Length: 464
Image (cartoon, rainbow, N blue to C red; front, side, top):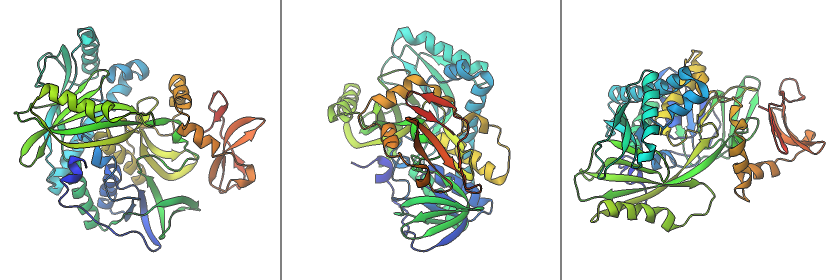
């Protein structure tokens, strides 16, 4: 089965592949909600944008989301305050709150019909032993200036022991929304190309060449808006995050449904929201998440959700099934900004940690402000060149050892090269005295340059 959003896409956008060499001010690699949000803002500001994707528009993560627009990312603010302090946590929260307002403003200004509606969002528990943790989260959020509530009554079809409520959050149809952004980009003179695979990006003086089989896009700026950064060096994002798979079913409950959006405070994770389908409300029930690559069968994924749905609504009918993969960062904060400290005018937004609807707008505003030469007060929170995540030794060890086919291990196995093999303006992993070292060859100076090694873990030494 397809996702609800893609099945309901009656105004599907079809575009040609790139088959010639073109130029643009900005090349955006990835036609999902982040790429389209960047394209919308920049084309509106007068930039000539070109957006390319290896598939059709929004058919990957954007088309397989639950599409909650919220600043409540689980029981998150206690963690942020304990780890980074109150100001950092406050800026993270209000960056996402502004994103909710930004999305609503775009919808209103461009008259996009995308089933947007405000809802309260709840993180709940049915376990009495977790109530104090819930209450602590409420206190932490209130302390940084946001009116969270502790509640024991919700719209769910079962009792809860307690929940954190954020009012004025939202939900929408992400494909209808991105179709609207797409129309605006085209109206503003932008170009969109699908089924176009990028195999390399090279920089020559002040311009980038984005290379595809059908043609090359020359641009001053590049935004890497693909789901997972496929350019490995010098950013090395493959080492700083992992992918998580999760599952969603669309359910006709045969009953009147609740208001609000919900997610459990702890494992096992269950996510609830309603959606419009054939002039009625259906339930979107999500969960069964696991690290991508770990074996899981139907009984552990869709069937477990279906059984839970039938436990709550015995006469229900399963209408849709879909799954998605999300990029999870080691410190739980997205990477937004410069792709690397040694690559000017090359930007990235990734690691949205399952909250991509809101984070994509945060990312678009930060990246577009960088291109426009504006200061963004939230940019420091999401700094993409930070190295603190690598200090999460436990998660790094898990990434290295959980799977024989670990993406981290594979990247390093595939990256053994000599100094002479590395082209200018590129990076690689070389062996120095039996130690793996990340290096980068500078374009202008024509020599190998490695910034100070910032962190070592086991056999690997890393540079940013």
